Length: 559
Image (cartoon, rainbow, N blue to C red; front, top):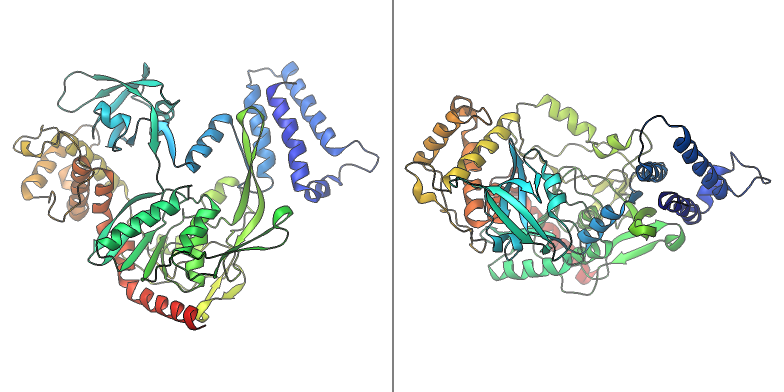
């Protein structure tokens, strides 16, 4: 039997075994008691179909791709989160969970005419090799990369530890292309991408990189350092966090919720046939005011944290409705380095709300691009409105009503609805063009190529710098130089006459790019976060979060 058929046969038998009565129940419509074993019949049918394709199909076909799509199609008939992973995909899944991968250590971004280095990770092969902000990647291991996407560059740059990769770049101010040979090594992939004091006494932690094996330790370190700088209130950003390891979500929640309180429950079949309750551990618990930020891409473990905070009345949830992934997947190893994740249970909030959004209607594409209907209709009416915080709408009931701490009522079955809904900063076509031209201008600026502003030249990025409000202000001279630059630009096609309505955004992006070039990606993000409408609303809500925290810990102490 071929490799592909072997994997398929194994999975058919494995899934039938794992899903037990579910699999057999569906098959009783097609097989009688006198029939052959259903799993054997399916395996035989599949092999017969493949043999017919091999003998009769008029075009070319890829045996492995046919097998893989068959497996994936089978799993997606169960739910959108049961998935098959090729050996390469499975390896990446394991890398993501281990908080590191093997590569060179750069943050890249795709602009109008190619992929450029945005930032270099400290103490990685890329830093040692001398890669810089603004370097354009034109070739990887002899392959032309000028038309590649950022995903294609990433795929080709990553590889085995200790194996060199040859990269050719174009650098502003340098006439000839530069060739580098960089030896791949472990690159950190932290859960917490940045943290800093946002306002006096208010800390910000961007826990946006998933819940991995090191998440809890990273959070401890960030909180310790911020408290040493005077933090008395915290904004924890979970926007875009796709989830990850359940134990880490429990540990993160335990940092804020009194000992012995339920964080989540898991109910399913097999190992979860009896509901299992996960409670806050006996570790040190922080009682400072807390605001949690979420959006449509906050999923799974991040929803467990947000749901626990909301149910117990520990803090305010601000932003957009979360994704709505409340299915528990178990990872299974398969032959030939492949694997699959299979749903075995469901997550519930401490007060019993289901996190999972309905997936019974529509396609996989519809499920993953789902947006809240009420929010969409509101957005369509306000297409030209400024991205300022909007009042919390009355939630449309999705699942059963659940009364949580303090008598607050929330609805299950569709993710976590924020206490206060805030539209994120909008990115229009004009703003995207401004972002591109701000990058191209800054690339020339920090290379010393903008006449009259040669003092902006940056030879080496310093990511250890603690950002100050006085760092790189956008002066009138700098702004005029930018306008002159875009009027001559032939890549994006933006002109200075078009930016009058977006002057504040232009200055924001210019400062962000220059700070990124000078002090790294985390400091650049700090610039953007300072004026984020969701952050600004969170600052307003922190006094209310203080009242919630005081009530919760008082009840825990005397309750």
